[in-house]
Image (cartoon, rainbow, N blue to C red; front, side, top):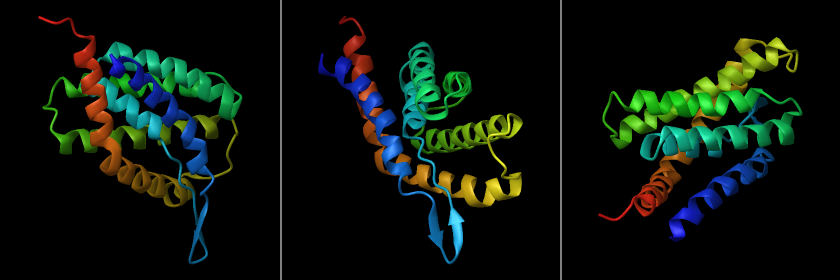
Length: 174
């Protein structure tokens, strides 16, 4: 019973702590500026799509994508589209391969790179950024990928455990 409530609380917590970790960015290392964008909630969505259901992950994606758009960028539509799209891709891809931990890790990283590139392309298309793609790749995409990789390695198994327990709690007893 507790897992039914705990998983949405984890989702909301991850969503709301992302901006706290964004305060540590940009980083200055040897005169170079690196932007690290945490995508904790996106990692949660990917794991939810892989270990629970596509429908649930897409619903979370739409709701929290809408909140993200309103809360962070004042333009509704970008993350409202990207979050469910990433969840959908995770669910579709995982149907064709085994759910080995290493594969799920690389799937999550690939989808986070896609999320970051899509958000950059949207921002560039509407003039929200003056950064060119080389600057984006060097100063934002690579540090963001490394940071989110570390998050997945450190917390992915725990998040997966809660998602699996929630799924078991929701299944009818036989």
